[in-house]
Length: 308
Image (cartoon, rainbow, N blue to C red; front, side, top):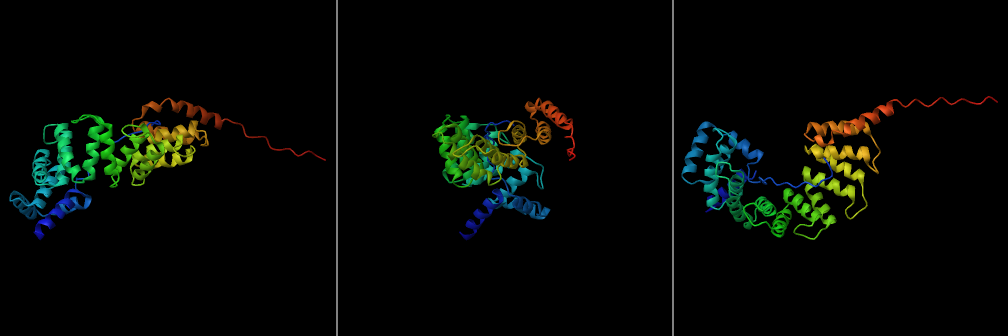
């Protein structure tokens, strides 16, 4: 019995390891993927140790099955093979691993190693979500939000996002905030939206930082604050959110509280365009015109003292 409990813990360790427009994350929340340390441990196995893992997995050892599922998914010690990965994840999921159930949901949603099926994805996410897995709860909520494999229900989406968000899942926090900011499934509440965006942004979620910046700019339970918005847009751009560059540039060009800085805006616009945001390309010309105008301003004449 002690070995079974220990194996369960190890199994979990191996698997769990623009413009001012709000953005929602509709990609699967992958919390069941192996952690960096888990991947390193698998990669450190010798060929002989990996053969022993394969043998133990075939005899039902759950930790070994988890290692094989991750190894085939990542291509560690073996050729990357989603079919084999899904096969091992399914065995673990059938035996009750919530991490594997969430992973199977992702594989079914994306059609990786199994036929693509939102309906089956919802079934796997539901199993893990009811057992308290925050990633599966967030994933199930997204299916309800989109109406993928389930009857679309903003109420159900909000319910599952909130359950997951309260466990600290930053994707759920961002998406729950989105629902509060749009009044879908919940009463419209911009201040509540800002609260959840801040929770996710504080955990390093780039989309949440972008969205929080938008609320700071327009004012949500507080006066509009463009400087605070700039701070969150900068945090979002550090996470690779292209639209954050556009929003910073927009404030430097057209902001009411932000000192106009066309040179800085020009730099940010080029970063946005390099990231694929061509919508802001026309703004480059205005920046060039303003920069040229500033450079051609003649220096003020030296003061002449009146002789006495």
